[in-house]
Image (cartoon, rainbow, N blue to C red; front, top):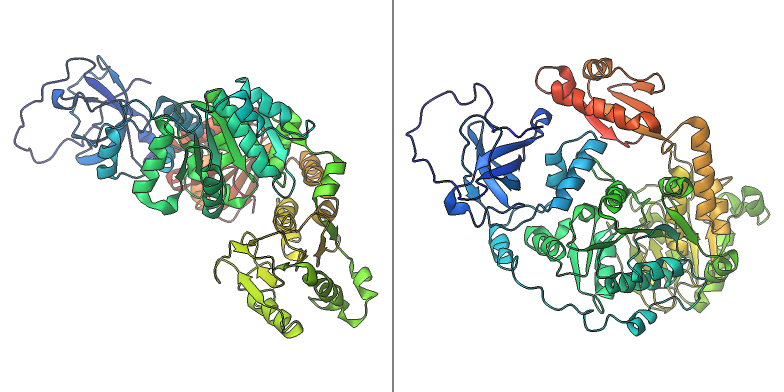
Length: 612
């Protein structure tokens, strides 16, 4: 579509202002193609503006600008400079160039358009997530580095065969050996890896990053939480030039991390979900940790999961891709079974040697122990704690900090009464998160995701109220439950005891006993194939009034293979994958064409949304 000037019919009318002298245009490529931060879907396109000669040197492609649109000042980014415009009228000039810092790279522009198309959203929404908010002082300071030679990195003097060998897995049969060797040769493989407890993930990452920099590439690591990002940045910063990008750091720090990656000055960028969009000057390796964690689901339009962004990027940029974590999401398993990702996992012997011994007793098993069988903390739990605590700290995982029956405070109170002489620590978002506890004898009660690491590992763990996770009426209940339990159990020393309580009959419980996340994901995927549920279909959730949803659906001319599941102010479309791209394009087109005149403008579209 040809770019058009940003003035709509009728919007230019009104009180006439005193005419200003026309600015002299830039001598070369005086037309700036600009993408604007506009909320309306039908304006999701580029517009042409005149580059005044005074702004010629700073109005670079990628720079943040301000323009006049529809009688008001609007922000945007220059996509490119051109010698002329297809717009027949006079072009409005750029009002301001923030700094000239090229924040919107060609790669990010391609990615933003692809994600907007895939998610039935707008490019403006994507760029709002992808590029840190403006901080003029920081942008001007960083703009001075845009044309400077890059400083030598930590690896330039040491990137050699012996340097890499320090990170190569000691076991030649390690699942990542072939992937790491390929990275060193400049090959960009795509794998999903279910790592083992302990130092397996750290060692695998170090090897992959060292191999990637040997071939001249940068790496991006996306983790679910700021805590995990801080931990990784600290560990990797000892050897690699690392930048971080998390929302909690504020606009100045975010811009610095973003530019360090985009300019090529950082070898590794580590960040939370929005960092999945951050451009790399030399894309080499993309890493997504624990892709099944709900923190990686974007909460703002166009609601793209970090996994979606990373997989699209890997295809566009030819970068290597590593999905790594203890568990295995059903979506990752689907990519593996399709052949798009290669699944790499340790052998059963290595799994048994590295993992704890998990027991998930049934009600019948507990009944043999007497009257305490029906209690939340049966005698089996107290016995395990008494036996294990002499060898080190014991972890007790509870589902929530505030739940009246299952809360952290209630559990801690019971344990204090049962073990009055033992120190007890609490860790949760509400009570304060502990990062590390010592090897001394103690009890640690924690909520999921807030379990602190113990020096020397925990002697044992008790996972309470397991049915709270496994019994939820949600599509991902089983794999989510296993991910949560494994996060705690992995902190226990090899072959140490773990007791899972309240998981009667749960498939996830048996997967934990066997330490088999791949098997559970494969089983879940097979079940969804039979029922035609995601990820073997594409779920598009439409939210709004019944009238607005009905108006939108009526204009889509849906393929008969699409299943429509209506609800109150909410409709789910289950679309077979072969028809998904065309159907989503129709939805996007219908929303854009009716955004001002139809009630369907009030429908929120969420691709890959929760079924509810």
